[in-house]
Length: 588
Ligand code: ARG
Image (cartoon, rainbow, N blue to C red; front, side, top):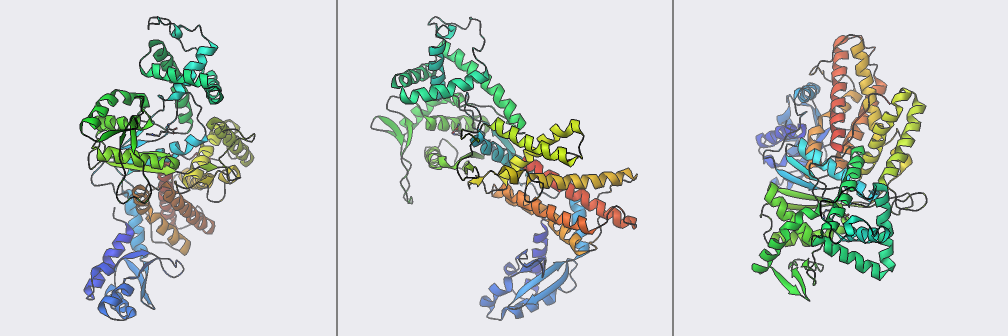
């Protein structure tokens, strides 16, 4: 559906034209003085220069043409030449009825759906998920959902880190701890009985131990590097071990992502790109894109317009080993081959921005991607604690994601039990749902690229700009709708009447903005815009609710209209939180 503000713009532009001015001056925006008007047009001020005429005279001419417009209730010219607009109540309620009857809830889908791959999550096997991984998962999941609502084919890929030195570290450590494992037998074949020699808990303990050891034991580090090399060369026993590490890790990761309501379409791994490397390297060499620099194979990626130094993109190290870059480039090759995406979006810590600049430039310059395939870096900032430093446990250690979720759930559980509107049996489940809203909304309500403070007290509050507040509003609406239905009545869509009062009109105006907000959030990859919108919408609703006795209204048509409006607000709120990646309980 066309946006309401665009419908008004059309009307004003026509009037500019009818009054003898260029239509392009008739752009309308939301009012920045909501106390005076709902929309405003400042075009007369700009037109004044062209037509060498006082702006308010131009505005007067335009306003005269608007007399009798069915869209507008009030048009007022204010010096020096603003056109202040109030929309007609009937026109507004009709617009909302249309939204309510539209299967896409007014969202105007993209004309040409695109195939978009979102590379997010990015966990590394054998390392427990910690809060740093949280942001990528939350932001990526939301971008994926918004992209789909807009009608695109969006593929989420977890892009598991399974190919680096961490594998060699684990193998080397296991070798020291359990030298008799069959996997270390030089004669190892796949026919040996094959069961993982560790649990996830052991694995998560082995890795940090090995990593710490490698920092002050050079000999051990050598061994780990050698093990990595052998694994990459296809050592059978190591491959079998690596498979166990993968299986055990992936099972655990899936369990954790499920808790976050984050779902990947693809569980591809860095190692999946390895088969593409030899041909890619050959191609880069044969076409003269890559050259040797102190033994390493590199592609120059600097551009004339650069204001800072962009170092070359390294393809192979001097010992011929591949790197993170190599894997990412080969992954691009694989993605092009398998999916032909129009765009690949990387949701990664913003500290990797320079790295991705190199990779993207290299892929473009060497034509590993089509010219019209977009490569996009969506960097995010650090999640800090109240002290402004990266979020830690109370003891100062790295916070595991599981512990964070558990802490939040516990906090929510206490509040929900206190509230006593949920049966004791359901309190845990409800705490889960509300807790997830606290975490996700707390994250997404900030501009993704900025650092933010994860404030447990604030995020779990039922008041203010929080996930629980939004859910509380939805639950409140649901409860009114339920009571209405318990009176034996049915909610009839499309029965909204013109607003009877100011807070109602305000709520209706907020409701009408939904399609514009979703479009903007999609184009700017900005879920935070959806957060601020639903916060405003919830505020408007609560204001209306406190002023209006809905269920005791005697005029049945009026009551029906309010109920329809509430149902529309509920649907918009629930659709919005689905875009953000969480849902609402029935009670809380
Ligand atoms: N595993 C990486 C890390 O922990 C993130 C992966 C991001 N995606 C990518 N295609 N490089 O830093």
